[in-house]
Image 1 (cartoon, rainbow over the protein chains, first blue to last red):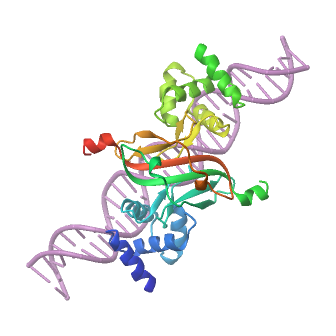
Image 2: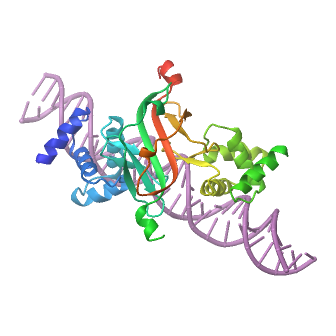
Image 3: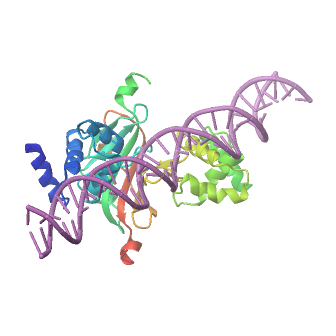
Length: 138
Length: 138
DNA sequence: CTTTTTTTTTGTAATGATTACAACTTTGTA
DNA sequence: TACAAAGTTGTAATCATTACAAAAAAAAAG
């Protein structure tokens, strides 16, 4: 309940009314930094919330992203992934194992931003083979 | 034919055997810098290549991307987009009109690259509202 | 507190991009 | 010419996501 109140006010900060489902999704994203898909979140929460529906997970993620509480990661062409960490950082997708790693980013030079358009979010994404898969020489 | 030979040897440089279909897709991407989807490419080429199949467009794009002759852009969650310009630059997706703009990038500081992983491609992506849509105040 | 209204959730049925697959065609080569 | 390999095609899945309308829950009103 400690956690629940915490997450509840976090959502409120973003102008999101905190329902049980929204808190559960948000909490899952803050606790699991694996950049999960909607399906993974659904599968993880379903056991403890038997009435939860996939549609609610999709709706909730859309809402969280629209209000800036969660980042929408589009590097993986198979499905959207989501990140509860909205601080500035990049992502590396291993094309062999599918793992999505964080890449630290101090700051993104202003010169890299588009001049004419109004930016609401940034993504710095890399693709390739991760250290783990390189060793296994997959 | 001038153009065809040119594109043929461009593909050969990347170790891709130049078929009529592959040349057509590659040429389309070099002539149209709109970051089209597979479907858009298919629709554009189909009239002049009545036997062309969607599957071939998908297969061809996968091949071109695998060999590094074309960039695979994953900023648009609705579908994959492709870019015949493989020089370093970023992209801005307008969430109102769906237009994908190029964003010039001088160079990406080495400090922004992941330390441990073997990178094969980079994407710098922005989302928001484009100048055009801001004026129309959509 | 009830009643009414608004918001949220849910399940099912589409949609639509992408892939699997097997047959057919073209190209390269002996 | 004839065989083998590579490429193309059409159709049928697959699978992530969205549309939609009914049910449930929460908030507002009386």
